[in-house]
Image 1 (cartoon, rainbow, N blue to C red):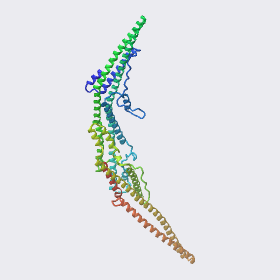
Image 2 (cartoon, rainbow, N blue to C red; image 1 turned 90 degrees about the vertical axis):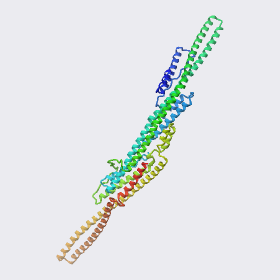
Image 3 (cartoon, rainbow, N blue to C red; image 1 turned 60 degrees about the horizontal axis):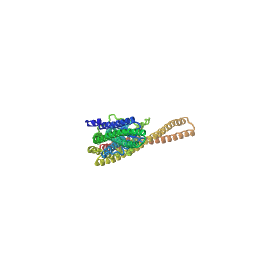
Image 4 (tube, rainbow, N blue to C red; image 1 turned 90 degrees about the horizontal axis):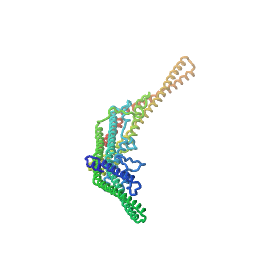
Length: 563
């Protein structure tokens, strides 16, 4: 105890060391009492042993559903002790701060470590299929629409990179809370709990010494009574033996009383030093640990969160202006492009089928993104309540102010809500535009297929026409040969009738072939005009049908992220 008192006078000495030294001195006191009792075995007035303290090392609050709560276990050890309410208040306040730090750190860690998907709310807006389509050799738009599609898709990819960086920064802020802030809270709690355990041990030693003193006094009174009984004996031999035994018992009780009085005096002195020196040191250590936790890692975590959100917003604004785009962005699509055949408009069919597939994939991503909820993507739901809980547990006004400054202000929240609505509407409009684009292309792919069927039928009729032409030539030669040979009129008439019939069939086939050819050429002209329009800038162009709504969607999304 004297060494602990001298350590407490040294500047910079950790308070925990002082408390540990005091507890060790109390343990040595109890061990010395135990050794003295063993030397006087059988003495009914020996002091009761003092329980040794249970170790409570720092940062041992790993609580599972299968283990007891360390806080509850410690409170059970010191229950019933005359502990100053200021010490209890400091302990409970640090526990509340530590628990709030744990809750906030877990809140942000879960948000930063979410898996990607609509279920977790971590589904950023990405359209890689449109980027791959714009770089494909079978792209059906012009160069301007190609560049516009790729730029918009690259902007979405750049915002996704910014979002990943923001989540990493949030994870680092949560790690700072879970690590350094919690360690400082535990350091202050260790100082307070060490003092309480030292007080418990000193109180137990004082109680044991007081009981030993009472036992020694009672033994002395019993020895005096035995002496009076011995003096009343008539047999001199028995009287002398009884008086000698009573005298020895009296001497032992006197020695025990002296020893117990010394133990009581030492225990009272130790309790007085604990109250005068150790308790203020414990309160100072708790206050210093709290101040370092709040002004250090807690305030730094608040600034880290603000910086993470601010960097993301500034980066999204730069992306919206066309800066910070990823170089060489060319993702691959899951569904392969169709293969070209030998048909006349096979290249158009390949282009339009590819466009249909990429539009369908983009619409599916847009629909899933619109259902996921934009609020959960940009900030964790319930963030304001989580930070308010931690701010309410902080005694530092600066730390509380920084924590409360992390969420958006009321005006910014209203602006963000409007931005979420506009972005959702733009995503729905783009998905609808992709659907209409697919239906339009499906119609023209069907028209190209119809042209191939009609052309196949025309070629079949042309083959019949050619066969009829050959038959007409043969029949004409046969009729001329019959007339030159002077055959009977019946045979020559029959040959001329067959020739006329075949000529009528040839004329009919020729007319049908010409009609089908004209109809097919009209379809072909429409297909060529549609293909040219897709690559132009008119109402049926890729630029108008896809690029324009895509640009509106990207602008709305980037503007929301820049809030």
